[in-house]
Image 1: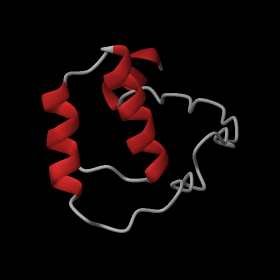
Image 2: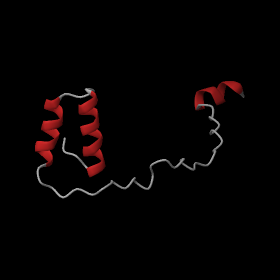
Image 3: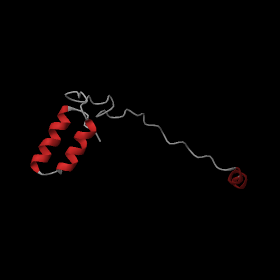
Image 4: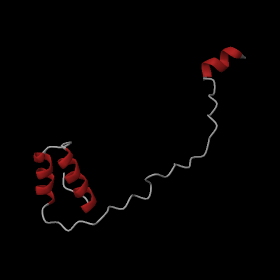
Length: 73
């Protein structure tokens, strides 16, 4: 998977120095990225971090089936 930003590339380089990822992994990502011009940071999507505003709906009451209604009369 290619890098998405310069910040991500720096983070992976830091992990490589710490020994948390292998050199092969870093080189694979670097190769796949190629000479693409990367942004400094990737903008978070609009929905990231937002709580979903949902209305609380009452659960629907289940109606008795025809057979049950006939026997209860």
